[in-house]
Amino acid sequence: MKLPLSRASLSHVYPVRNTYVLCLLMSNIWSQCLQLLHTRVNDHSVATWLDPIICESVTHDRIVLSVPNNFFIGWIQDNYLDMIKEIITDLTSTGLQIDFRSRNELSADVPGDKSSRPSEVSHRSGSAISDSFALKHRLNPLYTFESFVVGKCNDFSHAAAVAVSEKLAGSYNPLFIYADVGLGKTHLMSSIGYAVLSKDKTKKVYFTTSEEFTNETINAIQHDKMAYFRNKYRHVDLLLIDDIQFLARKERTQEEFFHTFNSLYENRKQIVITCDRFHNEISGIEERLKSRFGWGLVADMTMPELETRVAILKRKAYEDSVTIPDDVAFFLAEQADSNIRELVGSLIRLVAMSTLQGMPMTLELAEKCFKEKLNRPPKTVTVDEIISHVSKTFDVKVADIKSRKKHKLYSRPRQVAMYLARDLTELSYPEIGQAFGGKDHSTVIYATRKIEKELEKNRPLKSQVEGLKKDIKG
Image 1: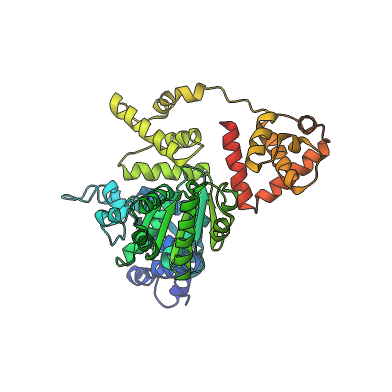
Image 2: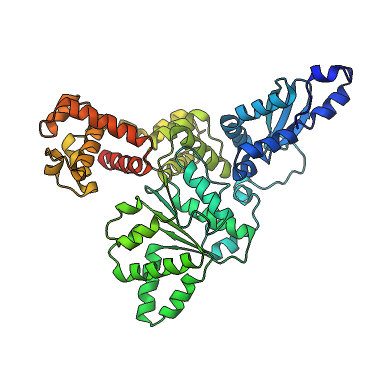
C-alpha cells in the first residue's frame, strides 16, 4: 500500500521542523522499495544485486544506500537506478537524491578490520557448501551465479540456468546451451550444479565432459563394467555434460548416451548440455540425439558487447584485489573481441607487466603491453574467402552458392554470404553481385536486408553468422 510520505502530505499532520518524525516515517521507504523491486526483477538478480543494499540514512531530500563495493555501485546505476528512482518517486510523491556508498571504503579506516580479501569471499556469497565439497562433485567453486556477469549477450541463457537450478526437471529439460569457445558456457553450467548443492547437499550432481564420458565408456567395455557405468550415470538428479560436440562419430558412446538420456528424462531427472554450435548443426551426431537435445530449452550465448566486457574485467580485477582505471578497462575490452578467456588473459598480462616493471596500471602501459597487436595490419577479407567459409558451414558447393538455383538449400547460404560480403568488405552492391556469378545489385540488397531482419529474432542464425565472422576474420 502506498504511504503518504512526502513532505507536503506530512505537513498537515506533523510540523516539518519535527525532523525525527519525518525521518522515522521515511526510513520505511527502502523496505517498501525492495518489496516492489521483487515484483519487477527476477529473484536471482534481487538476491545478487539488491538485497545486499542497506539504507544508511534518509532525510527530506536524500537517501543514502550502502553496497558491498564500487563494482555494485556501477552495476546498480547502469541496470537498476532508473527503476529505483521511479519506485521511490511513486512512494513519496517527490524525488529523492539517491547516494550510493561502498561499504569497503566505509570500513577501510575501521581499526582492527580483518575482513577477508575480495578474492576470498566474492564467490562464496550465500554459499552453503565448501570448496572441497564442490570439487568433490567436479564443480569449480569459482564458477557460481554470483561471479557470472550478465549482459545482453547471455541474459537469456543465464535466466534459463537460474530457473533450472531452482526447479530441476521442470519445463527446461534438457537445457541445451550453445556458444563459441570461451564465452562462459562451462561457468554457467557449473553455476547450476553449485546452486543446487548449496540448497540441498543430498542431491546427486555429476559434472563431466563428453570426452570423459567417451573414455569411461571405453574403459567399461574393456573391463566388463557396463553395469557399474550405467548405474553411475543413470541414478543422478542432475547430469551436467560439457562440449557434447565431441561425441561426433563415436557410435558406441552415442548409443550409451542415448540410453542414459532416455533413462534420466523418463525418471524426471535434469540434464544440462553445452555445445559450441546449435544442436541441429552438429555433424556426426545421430538424428535421434539431435532431436532430444531440442526437447527442452535451447539457449545461446554470444560475444559480450563492450560494456559487458568492461564489467567482466572490473569483476575479475575486484576478485583479484586489483584496481583498474576505467580508461584502461575500456582499452582492454576493445582489444579483446573474440572471447572472454582472451579478455581475462589480457588483464593478467597487463597486471604482470605492471607488477614486474613496478609501474602503475595506466593507458600508456596498456598500449605498450599490446603494441604488437595494435600495429598489426587488419586482415583483408575477400568475397571468395567468405563464400568458401559459408559453403563449408552449410555443407554446399561453392558453385551452388554462385549459381542461380533457387532452392532454399542454396538460397539461404547465398543470402548469408552476401550479407557477410556487405558487412566485411568495402564492396558496393553491384560489385558483390558480380562476385556471386553476375547477380543483379537488387538481389544483393534483398538478401542483406532479409538476413538483417532475421538476425533480430533468429538466435541460431545470429550465432551461426557471428561464428562465421570470427572464422573469416581469422
